[in-house]
Length: 440
Image (cartoon, rainbow, N blue to C red):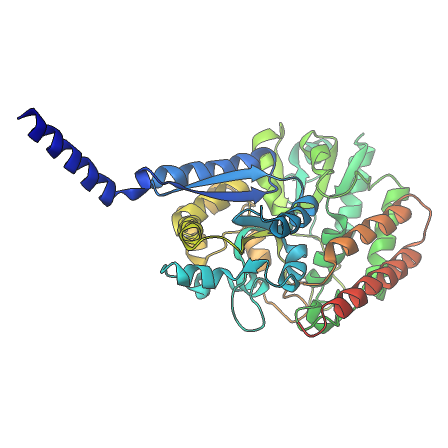
């Protein structure tokens, strides 16, 4: 009798294993990312919640340094056979990834081969078009898409006699507000993070002028920079004059200046909409979010801003079962509920229309004034000059922009000298990229 019971139990166990093979063979999906602080917590929570939602796959997020560090690191790991399944790549690395043949698999192909539905039309057009190849195939999954917005310290505005419920809408208003903030004792009235992105790239789209030829690089690899125009010169000269007067204080490259806003040291900053989660959690003062300033005498301004942030790339060379896990994870994080929750938590864009509508229906935008600024900036009228920027060797061009603009803020070059140098040095990199990838 005891033998019969044991056999029955064994049979039941085998049946259970057959029904749930993953219970003993959970597949790990390695995900390399570049998110820190509150956004790093968000990434970890996404993986944790997905892992808890099913038992077949385990997503393992790993911080691999800044965007500039993680992309070349992953390409090197691919050649060594140790690449992750998923790699987060910032938008300026898109052209480089597209040119790296064989490194990544288009996301649409991954979803199709996994047998999971994938409808590119559900993504917000301005976001989807940026990550779509000329053949119409979406190459990477939009993830933490962002755009540039304007943050200001409401408490500092009150102390300076400014209206705390209204941020400056034009550059002349920014100069005027900065002067009042300085007069009230503020030592850093205005600063900017990601200076190339905010003051040259988004600035171009916002004023409907070209940053580069060939539709800002979207129409071909033979694009060349065009940021030595009279309007660009006027803007950089304006910032240089603000710097000389102590109205603009340069605080460093990338997102480094953001800390000076959260601490209360700087009263106004232009940076990513993805900074909102940090401000919401750590700022000890009232804050406002408004659209980027513009020059009111420029016809057609303001236009729309361009996409920033990053997308998720699927690295090639893995097993089909592992790709099914990647596809299952992508389906999870693309659902309207998860997307809406991520958007509301971080300030990154809701990359699908359904997530935007879900957030709007919930009353979130009314309860959190300013949280819809990034969305409305992105979905305004879009032209070929404002659809996005996709250039080869773009990370290196950003470095050149930093180097040359720092010469201006330091009083060592004029705005014209710096912009001419950016165009010359940047175009040399574009020509090099075009030669290296000709015929691909």
